[in-house]
Image (cartoon, rainbow, N blue to C red; front, side, top):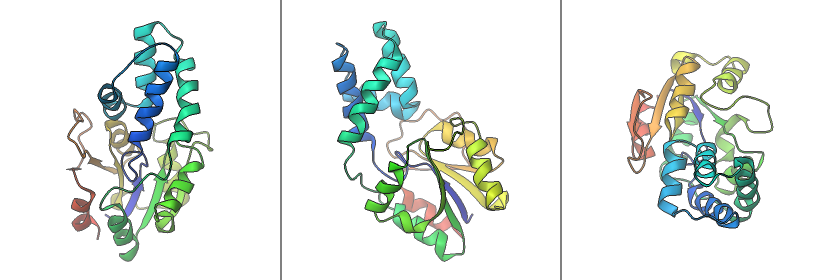
Length: 207
């Protein structure tokens, strides 16, 4: 594989610590409580949106209010997220063999800033962020846009992410999926072609 489409949060960058804190603050602000562990599991195993709806339902809140609080706190707390071990090495290898890296994230343009700060931005050919009106994963529309725009050979392409919805999105776009499950938290339902706990394990697959 040499055409890599990457998720950002929890795949390239360790953004979860700040995301968890922001969610806890939003819950507390509305008068509830949730542990960091429970928050992390909801986000990792499903999504932030799932966590918002689940907790709001438990308390009888409008989940939009919880989301508003989370979106207010998260940018304040998300300061210079660090890259996971192996991220730069794999991105670098992809470029070295003549391949390309693409970003597919539901974050806004701040995602580009985080990549720049982590020293990873220069490895990317293109990106889709929340600034573009694509439906959320596992819908393949954003991936199809990148694949079609750059005339990517789908037999050489893979979606790399840390959740089932990333792998499902890749499969829905007709490409492979590599699951990065660093702490083995995922109940795997997406049949990834490859599953790793360390991004360095992907290096031999880049060729």
